[in-house]
Length: 249
Image (cartoon, rainbow, N blue to C red; front, top):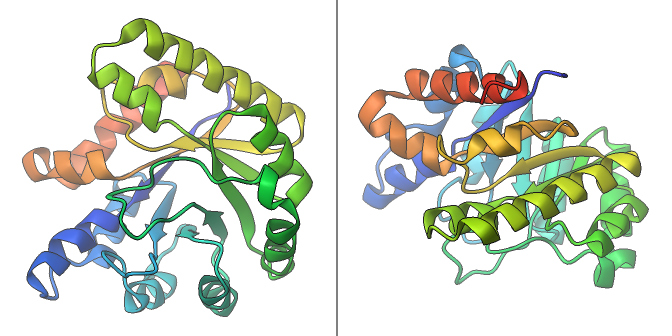
């Protein structure tokens, strides 16, 4: 089975930094450590309210990284201009509400298809691989293909929440729906990624889905790194992903 890439999201290193308004901990340093530990790429979400990653972080990440940057952003004119200026390897469009703690659901593509198609086109022309962060609803997956996206990232947050709540029958049904969504997206010619809320306890069944090419994981890795260190935490996540991919998870 194809090796599964790991993208490490460094947003919440910036969350800790910004809590004190200091210069540390530096998310760029975390990104470089993640690269050394085996991350295949780095993810950073520049939010409208700049609650964690800020513009200077993107500048410095683009200058420092040796592996691809996945630039998460809302589909707004401001963010499009920033992405076109930097031209990161990948742009992932996500829904964004100012009052939310974290991204709560997938992007609504089907009802916004014309606008998103026009939004994606210049990014793709600039050489960015455009991904849409969506749920497993077939309507959204089919709309993503029509919109011109190269990639869809399936939202695993609900699956992880069901696991944490001990609602295992519902969790298994959600996993089956994610698997079906991955098959549909792959069949439509989309590269399939997944992420949101994944932990050591929840990653293996997702990593085992054969259509997936990349997982993007952040909050858990940064939290666990407080206790175990970033390099060893990333190495353990990498080990569990590889084991699941080999049918040993």
